[in-house]
Image (tube, rainbow, N blue to C red):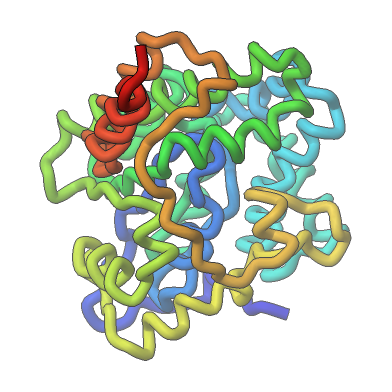
Length: 330
């Protein structure tokens, strides 16, 4: 059994109540594996998806998913990340009994502001740095504002992923919620564009040392150079032994589905096989014409992709070549 993190004591140079780190990214952006990587650091406690900025109160958090149209079983799965985190922090285990007690503990606090649950958990895991990611946090202006308002001094890691590979990943997931193909395709594109625009605009107002942008592909393809840069930004040890430990993502306390086999709190594909795996080079930004995305959407997404560090110029050069008439053609 993992010892409850609340018994840990502050070491030399550690703050008693350090500011948390939030990974900001839309769905299908390598955020679960990024959180697992960060959690391998001995000074970081990485939470599963807590969803605490998705609703104003605990009452809304518990009942809100049903009101938004999520099937009951899907809503229970979404909340299981929060339940298993409470169980792990309070009791050092995620057994069905501990998770049930975590749910009862939460249900007794319906009038708590939902972010207060995170404040409680952060206090319990201190002096470790709490790290959290929930794609819901960046789903609307209101949710992201709730996060920034409650944690104005936190560190924010803006995690990006190539727009085309993000779309393909979303297309494979979204049929569970959107069966109409056109709605699914445009919805996935809008999710990527609006979330990253929202993150970019809000973080621009913060002091530059308070946020960092990282391409998920760089983190997974070159963790040995990308992770030290992130840790240096956080002011944490980035020695070789620490990096080697962080690469063992299968050791994350929330890897897998818990003793009951039905606990989530992150990407199910990664939780099934929680080992670090490199990803291929995504190449230039070239949207599949079969997706039928409006031209203006493609232009805006391409501009944002270039701003986030993806190769748009090469795609444009190839498009010009593809549109040239064949030699000798009429």
